[in-house]
Length: 362
Ligand SMILES: C[S@@+](CC[C@H](N)C(=O)[O-])C[C@H]1O[C@@H](n2cnc3c(N)ncnc32)[C@H](O)[C@@H]1O
Image (cartoon, rainbow, N blue to C red; front, side):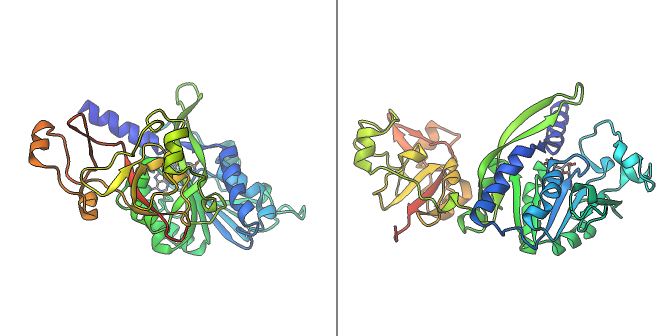
């Protein structure tokens, strides 16, 4: 029971990470490098935010004119609806406003909108943000926030970690453009991987660090490295990996596991070779290859196609042969549908692979 509580507390806390300004700036610049007009005339929605102090709101409000935005909308989730309870203290910004409401402050979400010059200085910037309490708590699944989603062209946020699958489904259902943060593990989720395989979703350009405030002393803690997930085009994904041939790898690879070898290991239960490092993918192999999932950071759809994620039922669907009974007797933990090769008479499972193949046109 105690363990379950601890796990739940950790999951809830994982939902409260926040994003650094420089990480947002670096990533958005990468899309602008590829298409300077990517945000021009667009309505951008930042849901799952805390607009009073979020760097997403700050970045987009500060750069409103530079990006050529039509409208910026940012919403927050009511403190009392958050799973992870932190001592709640409304900001001075909120309490100093005539429409501050002590109850709504806890039970309602907020909406911040930037669309026009309010201060009269002939510029549209962060000073012109106007806010209201939402009718509800700001849950992205509510009717109220769905309506804002439908109005938006581009959605940008770091959604709660525990609702990542639901959040992506929410975006896909409305067919919106998006730039969001998620954990690298999410690429293998059964709801997410097919979208990546079909080039409907891809990884962004930079990796990103999540931070949270330690509630006791207010210090910043780095929590995890994660990734941007998007369906907006950027230059990195059109840069093919520069690779050596198989013979060159055996001669010059920096990896001792490859250098001096005569062949890549072939899987026992699927017609593919195992490539333990992305930079060791041979440029001249035409068949299927199992590569680490971090290959997706370098994936260029003109260079490779993704065959699938060989794991469990999905692996069986891909045609991976089940383990022979005698191997299962040696190792009861073997799960049909996972790739394996034989080493010193024992089955060996490579760590988290996806299957790819060179594009025929390359
Ligand atoms: C990972 S934090 C990111 C905060 C901010 N966007 C940033 O990156 O600095 C996710 C935020 O979503 C909020 N949240 C959790 N569940 C939500 C839901 N169902 N709908 C909307 N927001 C939610 C959390 O309370 C938290 O403020």
